[in-house]
Length: 65
Image 1 (cartoon, rainbow, N blue to C red):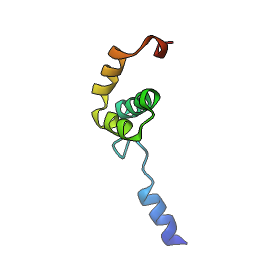
Image 2 (cartoon, rainbow, N blue to C red):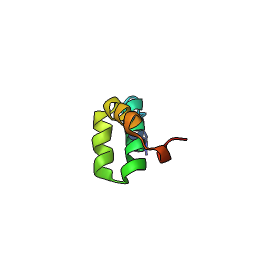
Image 3 (cartoon, rainbow, N blue to C red):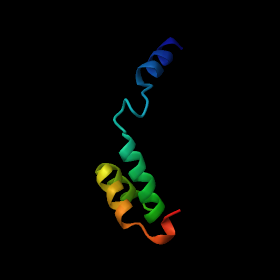
């Protein structure tokens, strides 16, 4: 039981500590909204803010609220 608690403490990282940034999270959500594809969402997450800017510049009228 003690070993399990130590493993949980050692591996319990937050998203920010593990390297997932805000730009990647926004890019994945935007890509999923538009394409509904895990492959494209993963690629957008890698591109991060580049994809977010691209999405903002190319969004369609039905995507704007």
